[in-house]
Every structure is written in structure tokens, then in C-alpha cells.
Image 1 (cartoon, rainbow, N blue to C red):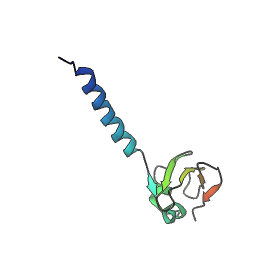
Image 2 (cartoon, helix red, strand yellow):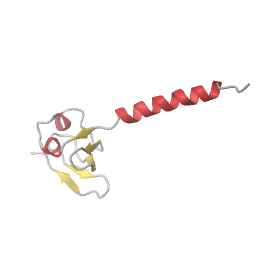
Image 3 (cartoon, rainbow, N blue to C red):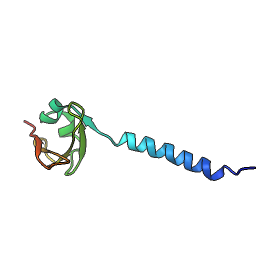
Length: 84
């Protein structure tokens, strides 16, 4: 008989990991990233926060904490969006 005790624990941890990974992906459109009044710029923004631009598919990082803080392309470091 095969003991599946460890298999079930690993299977459950894998499911939890997948749920956590899915929950951590924040997305916003180009229009939202460029709008200083949008929630992505006014709520929970911190230096280095990563957001996937759902319009372009590009991952951007907050270069500032304020509503008009820029968003930089995570791969190139070039400013991608300046909220106004």
C-alpha cells in the first residue's frame, strides 16, 4: 500500500501557492495608470509596487508613492506612465 500523506500535503500547499500567486497580480489599464485620480494611483501605491498594464501586457513599477508618481517599465526602467 502506498502512503499518500505527504502527497496530499504537497498538493494542498501547491493549491494555496497558486491562489496566493493569482491574488498578488494587480492589473490596471493604460488610462488608469495615467490618471492621477484612479484607484491604482491613490490607494495602496508604494515605491516599487508592481502592476501589470492590462492594455499592453507590460509590467510596471511605481517610482513614487504619490498620485502623480511615475510608473516605470519593470524591464527597462524607462518611464512608462506619468499620471496627470
